[in-house]
Length: 464
Image (cartoon, rainbow, N blue to C red; front, side, top):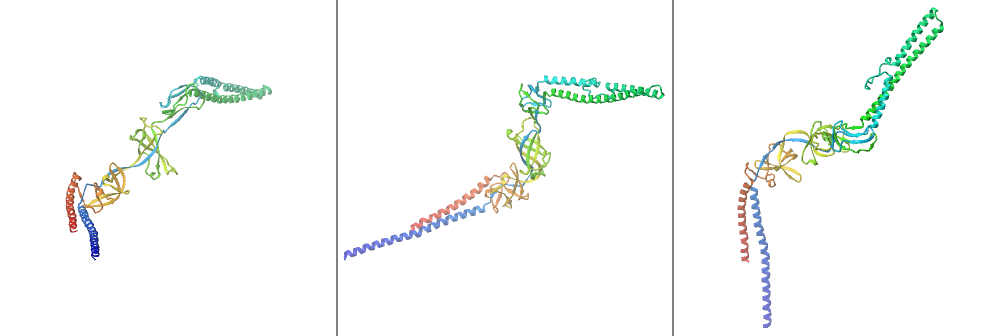
């Protein structure tokens, strides 16, 4: 009996211990969510207070009015510099090269000797042609220098004069014989003989005229042969037909070259042509006389100037462009044919164009916008940008021209945000320092509240 009571008492104590442990576990599960909720409520209250403080505070910004500027309209160009005149010089005569008077890069003028050929054979050919020409001139009774190319009239040549005299004598004899025959003072045979001689003299006169005509034709042929021989001798010295710079010189001293062999290439260096293709949408804008500015890689940022001179009347069907050529002064010989050039064609100057500083423009997702200040409130406005000059952007759409724009702290602005316009010379740091002290006080007040909230937790623990 005593043993049974002892066992019952132990079981009862064990049951009470378990009951107390379960009670403590249930109290802990109830208290923990309450503590978490209290902490969250305190934090949320602090954040709300801070947001309310910031929302009520205005942003100090610098501003600018919409500006005006002049915009030089231009068309991009990319093209190649070319020589307006390039000549491949050939020898008109054949022969052995005796002298080469220029090198690659030599600058020549019109008539500058380039190459000399052997002239002995050509000189002999000229002498022969001259002798034949003089012989023909003598047949026509021509005297004086060979430059006198006009032959005398037919009646003044010796052959025609002789034939004329014979014809006149035969005519006189025939007329006398005819008169005497009519009077019966001579026989008919004498008359017939005189008539025959007259006809022979007339035929001789016609033959003399034909001979003179043939001799004159022969004179022209032999004069042409003489002129060709003189030209061949003169062509033994190959001369520059244009002014420029020698770019090629393929012949060497001592080699034999036949007729029409190329001996040099000359390119004109001043002026040069800049040839480019312009898009068809600019066809109504580009006109002769417009200025062109360009750079070449060899001279970095140095700008060269030209002027539009020639415009193609047709369009490239593939590229949808038309060819434009500008003349470029090259007196300093800095530019060379073949250089690649990039630049612009200046079309017109637009005055009084709306512009804003780069600091007033905000670009988000590729869309530019500005922040208009109106009665201390911001209005975000989308704009369309044009060209940029320095730190100014052209505004083509979106503004009227009388707005005032924010130029600082754009990342803190949005439509409806209040702003305070800083005076000229007033720095943003001074305004930010004043606003920072207010925020610090609010933070301290929020921190005190936080400490009070955190102080309630031990009281709950003491209750526990």
